[in-house]
Amino acid sequence: AHHNVSAPIILSGDVHWAELGMGYCAGGQLLEVTSSGMTHTWGDHPFPDSNILANYGAQTGMPIAQRVMPWRYQIRDADTGTQQYYLGHNFGEIEFDWLARQVS
Image (cartoon, rainbow, N blue to C red):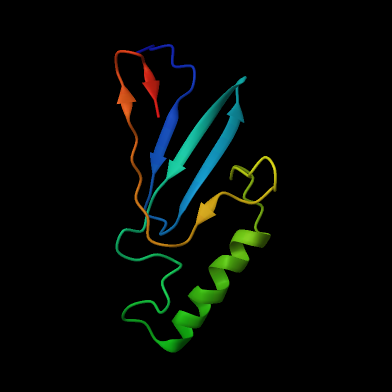
């Protein structure tokens, strides 16, 4: 059905970190809010139930990947250019104001 949505939002997870992403397509934009990691994340030090090699790989690999990979949709801070991600425990909350038709 056609609902004339001007700014759709995708909520995603299961990646074990949090981030904000923005894609531009067909003359519009698509916001992605990722929240994942209430029990364990890429930022856990050490990973529960892992061996020392897996822990070392997680502690160094994901922060390096976040800095060097071309995360082309990841939002960056307008002033500093810093990527908007978080590798620690997190959860997301979104409020819908159905009468005003706003999301915050």
